[in-house]
Image 1 (cartoon, rainbow, N blue to C red):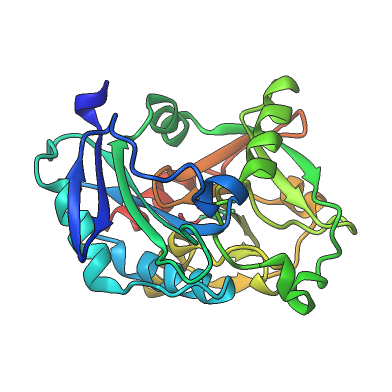
Image 2 (cartoon, rainbow, N blue to C red):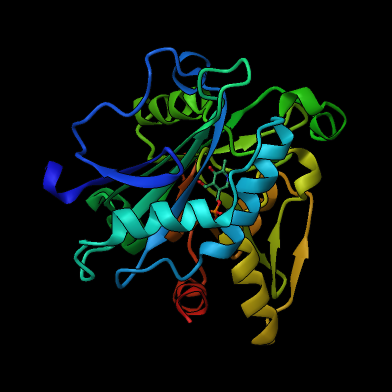
Length: 282
Ligand code: PLP
C-alpha cells in the first residue's frame, strides 16, 4: 500500500519528500499530543489540485483562529509539488495539508503533506448516496459565534468527536451524520456541508452557527446561481430536511453524496443529484 502514498515535510527551508513509512514528527509535536493544529483535505484530480485556492485561504484563516503562523502559499505549493511528482494521474487522490504547533515554545510549526488514493467507500457513496442520522452537538446554534475559544469555523486537527460520531452512526447502521444544535437546527456533517433543495432553491445553514465554511458548497452555489438555480443561506431543522426535495452531504473529496435515508426514513432526491454533480464537475 505504501507505494500508493506519498509524504513531504517542510525541513530546513525546503520540501523534503520522505518515505511514507519514515517518521516525520517528534513524539512531542503538539499536533500529536494535543491535536493542536489545522489541516485541509484537497481533491487530486488528473494529477493536480484544481480547487486548491479556497483550501489554502481556509487553511490560513484556520491557522489565524489558532494563533498559528501560516507558512504561506509557496511552502504549501512546494509540499504539493513534492508529493504529486510521481503520482499516477489516473488515480483520484486526496492530499492532506497539515500544520501543527510543532514543539511549541517558539519552535517553528510543523507543515506536512500526505497524499493517498481516495478510499473506494468514498467513491461508492458519491455514486449510491448515504444513509445518515441526526446527532446533537449540544451547543446552541448562535453560541460559537460568540465563543472564539470553541474555534467555530476552524478546520482543526481535533476530529476525535467527528470520528466518534461516525462510529456511533455505524453502530446505528447508518453511513453518516447530520450534526444539529441544542435547539435542533441543522449544522453540518462530521466531514461535510449539508445542502438541501426545497422550493426550487438550494439551501445551506449559516456559518454563524460555527460550522466550517465549505469550499465545495461555495463552488456549487456559485455555479448553481450562474446556471439559474437560486441559492439561500437558511437556518433549517431536521424536519426541513425530511420535507426537502433532496439532501446532500458535500465535500471536496467525496463531492455530493445524496442522503437516501435520514433517521431511518427513506427519502428521494427529486432526480437532482445528477445536476448537482454536473455543476460540481464543471
Ligand atoms: N464541514 C466539515 C466539518 C468538514 O470537515 C468538511 C470537509 O472536510 C466540510 C464541512 C466540507 O468542506 P469542503 O467542501 O471544503 O471539503
